[in-house]
Length: 298
Length: 289
Image (cartoon, rainbow over all chains, first blue to last red; front, side, top):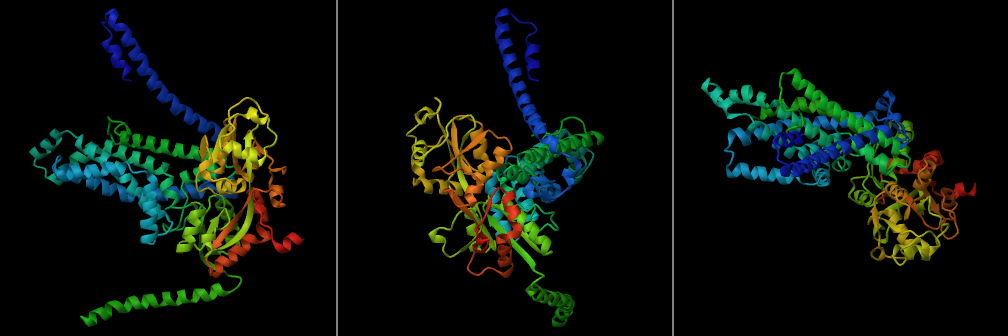
């Protein structure tokens, strides 16, 4: 992508400049190619090893014979429940925090800077630490036990920093002229926020949500000690439920002969992520919100 | 004010009383032999968990009022959770240590630890002293043991793994003297590492190794002390390097826990034990048969 710029600047070259230009272009293109190739390799590897095991019944049936037979129906269901709990808590909280940080307090105030610093530290905390915290606080201290709720709350804590930071950047990226124009028309602060700023920031806000969904779906370490390992269909949010990533980990690492099932489950997980990404892009297009593509803002 | 409080409390009491009545009735039902009910939580060894999950499923089918949640985290977590009461039953893939004498172990199966090499490795057998020299880095090339001229990659388990303790105990060496090239976590991880490098040697659960060999993974189990490394030899008690898979409870577990442990030890679940590549625990009366 950025190679194009080098070509453009190389249209009126002297011979002396041509050689370094050429090597730079090659290096940049090769780096980009390597990234794409790695992604393609991972996707193809998972697909080749997993797709033969996939069938509609695999998505619906319960886990049999420690995962070597049957399907992943209850696991898929638990994953969705955990994700719903996570988003239901994380989205309102992070949006409100982002609004407070951008629209309500001075951008460069000591308070805002310190909150941001805390969030950056939180974002760098390894997920297993969130898992241990979730186990100690939600599961044992609040008595929620190994449950969907414990898992969802722990993941919400984990994705909050990313979600707040991306939301904040999304809101800041809205040009100030929009706000001036709204003020000139006599709109109040709240009306400006809800009618002008947030709709304009929606694509980037969605990008943050999709990023968080990706992080939550991929999470294993934080979930083993919180949402747990039970592969039964949960009857309530207080039941333990195994997520897709925990299932993949268990199939690959603990169950002899579970390797192919791990790949099949990985296929489902990757497909789910791609589908969520594609749907979001589609929805944004349908809503007439052009421009920054989903994921591009992270 | 008082009268208002009374008005507020009366309906709440009216609602609560039938609930209390039902709750107090439940233990009476549970005391009945055929209708067990209640919830049981197990945590611990990730080696035992897949097996116990399957046993629990069968137990739940026979006793529809029972829910059994199986969680993992390692043998150490199982023992800690049983002590604190987070779990009624812990799972441990090793014997209890002397400082864990406050708990009771209930063996449900056994698992052997076998030494594995890559399929292409011509080595036929290693003695225990040879294993020690390999793991303490005194021998670095297979040619010194009669194999090909190839560097030995020593695959070792991470601290805290039950297989590691059995391996070191059997060889009579301490962990710090081991000079490993690769440290792995789970058995499957060990198998994948050895299968991926021709000069490597590792040790894993024999059941896991057998399952992988069946699935065509290029590894080979080496005999130990002249005894073939197979689940059959672990079952017969001949294979020297083996470990028990235990359920762990405090001195006075609840009745449901006792019933479940009995079920885990019964012949009704032997097929599940074998399907998970373990060996059913030796039982007094059954061995006599």
